[in-house]
Picture 1: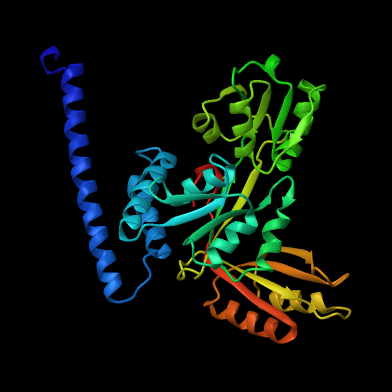
Picture 2: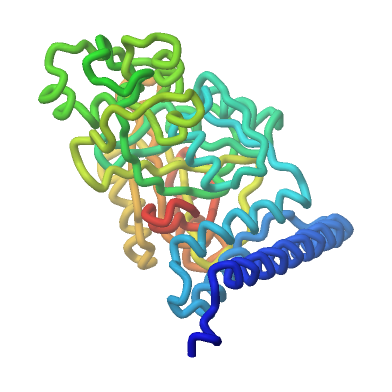
Length: 366
């Protein structure tokens, strides 16, 4: 029995052999992806096929049968799949900067490390760069489970001609960080207005005499903390590494389950994946019961309405546009029929896109 027992060096040698095999197979997979990219170019097909990617995840999870931790498995193959996809065509993604904002973190989780990321100063600029085709995609926050809609994103859909290409639900955990890691050194706490609001009670209880400073992004707050030893920032986990900051307290959000939904925007909506959401922007007729007519159409067609949000039309007092999210793809007959009826009864109608549904935020990827 003792003669058959493996030693640590023997097991490590076997691990090295396995790693070499994995590396060889990864190279082969990348070569296959590049070949597919060439074939798609010859037939003018889209490089991104969300349906195919969804099928890969489903097959792997089924074959895994719980043998490898599912969250890690999805994360590993997400990076492999996105890297192989990007080998067909380099993807440039705009986001609300600077580096290490939650939007940047969401972008990395959606597109992987291999994409090229452009940090911009506002959500409006992200939309503008996508519309002008300076970048292929943008990623923007649209709503938070605690603080509600991000109105600058909704307003930008009213200004720019873009399509929603995907969504990502990211579980948000706020960290209080500073240069030293000592709470006694903090004389001001800086962050974006939403994280400050989401940590209001914690700050009131633990730092009652310390003023807060709203800034345009969590990444900007982290930059300030990196340059000033007396500034603490509420920032993402990515900011800690990016700006070489120390954690004072982890997870200072007032409510557990804090989740932000992000949208991926581009010039063209992706092909049908089989598990999709459709978004519309509607102008409702100025008469009693107009909104109810739209809702009645959805109900009659048994269409699941996932979200409805109103925004005032600038320059037109007491007039509103409505954002609707419904489950299904515009190519699904029932969705297509319902949208055609809505188009006829609404003075303004815009299809914002049909795109794959985001996964569970606990998985950290879409």
